[in-house]
Length: 284
Image 1 (cartoon, rainbow, N blue to C red):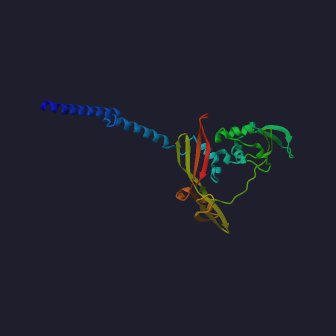
Image 2: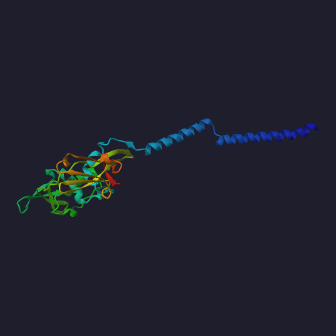
Image 3: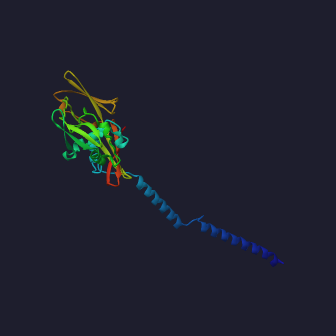
């Protein structure tokens, strides 16, 4: 009788044992408990993903005069100093665009006509396509110049060229002497300084510090005011000179780096030409 009573109990214990083994196998197979190797693999893969992400988003420092941007920077710096240029070439007027490349135009770019001015000087023609080709290296392949907007005989470009007409994709130009005013004496001024240059995802970002200034004269005293902003609302220094010593004085942005404005200029990459072009510039 005792053996008969023990038999069901043994069967129950065996069934429970089998069920527990099955549950353990299933959990192990699904990775509920995992193992050291799979855990390490997961951690390693996660680290790789994080490292790749870090490499994609971390800017790389480059030389402050890196050849990929410095020529364009120097060409445009007189235009980015006074005004935000946040929309590529469209931030510039057509007159500014032509002024930028006027001195690069070669004699062979102009075609002499038989027509002459009232003083007997010849008129020349210049194709708009030539102008655009010069501008492409600064602003990329999408740059556009509307020739009709440049009819202005009173506007002399820095190569002595006047545009008097535009038709059929050609400018009609004449050349005249360039007049220049005579300014008063000034100190030796360093208005801006590049402080960093980085590249990330084929975009170069250049940051520089800039100061602005104004000058007034009263009798023998010359007052030189230094401002932190382009609108000259925040005066950060004022110096007094005489005409005898002002030309020997030095004013540099390095003395005002904490107060100076920051100009951020970006250059985009053109895969077709394997070169960079101006994208934007913002004064803050």
